[in-house]
Image 1 (spheres, one colour):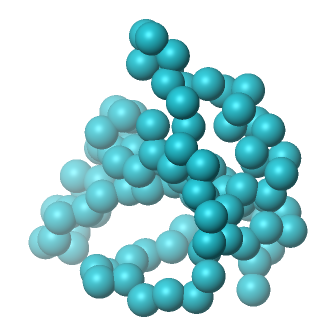
Image 2 (cartoon, rainbow, N blue to C red; image 1 turned 135 degrees about the vertical axis):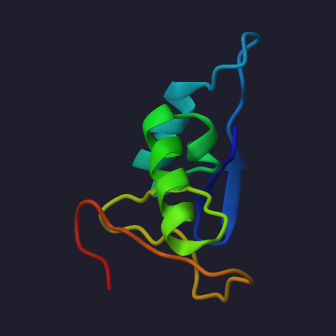
Length: 96
């Protein structure tokens, strides 16, 4: 499971023996202000995989999808620079 990011600190989500995450710990971390980060969503969802393939066809470039769930008054990351191109789609809420 990917880390649960919160500002500059991270908590690694623990997995149960069957490979599923400890969802209660993830809920608690989110309530404490951590962002939940799920990398490689295009490998986990057929719908997102289709979207990625369609974007790859349109952009002629490899596409990957990550998901970030950040509490209303939280900040998932401090200002930074990515080493790759990023397209951000915010589905809910307001961020500055």
